[in-house]
Image (cartoon, rainbow, N blue to C red; front, side):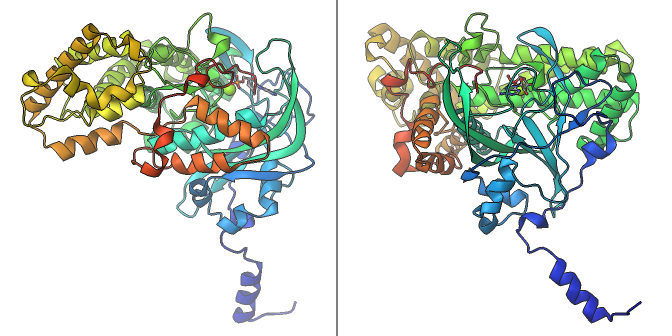
Length: 551
Ligand code: AMP
Ligand code: MG
C-alpha cells in the first residue's frame, strides 16, 4: 500500500473538509431513528403504525423551490452562513427536493385528544423530520419540514401546506422567540411551485393556493401525544423506550431512567408548561388549538395554526372559527386547558412512575407554579417590585375595566408605563390628565362615558399610590415594564397584509415584519405605525379576525 506522509494527509483532509457555514458542514447525529423502534414498512400509504415511534418517508419532490425568507438567528444556531442561506441549494434542501448525505427523513407516530376527545392515531401527516444537527456548541436541533408531502400519518389529507399558513407559522415562531416565549423556531419559508387546493373557511368554496414549506427547528418535536399513543395501545415496552430516550436526550440532567427520575421528569414537564402558558398570558397570545398532540414535552409553543394575539382584551376570545361554538381554547381558558392536557399525559406515563400520589402532587405543582410565575409577570407588567396579596384585587379591578370597554391590551400595558407619579399627588390630578397616556388604547371613543373615565382614573390613582408605596425610581419602573409589555406583536391583520402581498409575489412585508419583531420591546419610532390598534377594516376581515384549521 502506498504510504503518505502527515503533511499530505492533512492536505487531503482539508480538501475534503466542508467549508464553514456550508450545508454539508452541519453535523448530523440522528438519535431518534437510531434509538427508537421503526415501522418496518417503508411504503408511503396511510395506515395504523403499531409498535413503532416513526416511519421512514421521503419528502415529495417539487417543481420550483424558491426561498421566501429565512431567519438569520436560526441559521446561526445551525452554523449556516448568509451565503448558504441565499443559495439555490438552500431552497432545494429546505423544500425537501434535495437531501444531504447524513439526513435520515422520518415522520413520527402520535395520537391526541382533539377538542377534549381522544382522536386515536394522528402523527406527522405533513411534517417530515430531516434529522438532528449537533452544532459546534453541542446543542441538538431537529430539522422538520412542514408541508413537504404526505406521510403514512396523513389520513385523508394531502401532506401539503399553503403559503398563507406558512407565512403565519414562520413569522409567529420567530416573533414568539424574540418576545421571550418558549417556542419552536423557523429556519426558512419556501415556495414549492406547486398548487394546493384548500377550502379556507370550510364553506364549500375551495380554491387553489400556492404550496409552501416551513423548516421548523427545535431541540425536539416530541409531544404529549407521542406518549399517549403508545400508552393507549398498551405498548409498554415502546412507552419505556420512548421515555428513556426522552429522559436521556431532552432531560439529561435528571439522571438515569428510574421511577424517581420519571417523577422528576413529570414535575419538570408541568413546570415548563406552566411557564409557557404564563408567557402566553403576558403577551396576549392565544394558541387556538391546544389539543394534546399540539403540546410539546419541552414546554415549547408548537404548531402555529389559527393562533392570534389579542387586540382588544377579551378573555373569551378565540381566533379559531372551528372552536367558535364550544369556545374551549379561548385566551382565558388556556391555563386550565394546559392542566387538563397534563392530566392526559399523566395517565399515559403513570406506568413509568407507578404511584398516584406523586403524579397528583406534580399536577398541583402546575397550578402553584403557574400562580407564582403569573404573579411575578403581573408585577413586571405593572412595574411593581413584587406582587403582594392586595395586588390581586388591583389586577382584578383592572381586568374588569379592560373588558368593560373595547381596550387594546398591548397598547394599554405599554402606555401604562407612561402614567407617571409626577409632582402633584394622584388624588389632586384630573381624570383627563391621568388618562392622557392610555387614551390611544381605546377602540370606541363613544364608550368612554364620564362614569367609565371616573372609574379608570380612580384605578390609576390607586395604582400611583401603590407605586409610591413601592418607592421605585421612575426610569427603572418604566424600563422594567417595557421589558414585560411588548410594543410590537404580530397582529392577525399584519400577518394577513404580509400574506396578501406575498401571494402577489411581493415578500417585502414578510422581511419587514421579521425584522420589526426581532426587537418587540424596543421603541423603533420609524415603525410606530405597526404598534397602532387593529384598523377598523380588520375587525371582521377573513384571515385577520376569523381563522380556521384549514392550512
Ligand atoms: P393540526 O390541527 O395542524 O395540529 O393537525 C392535526 C393532525 O392532522 C396532525 O396529525 C397533522 O399532521 C394532520 N394534518 C393536518 N393537515 C394535514 C395535511 N394537509 N396533510 C396531512 N396531514 C395533515
Ligand atoms: Mg398539530
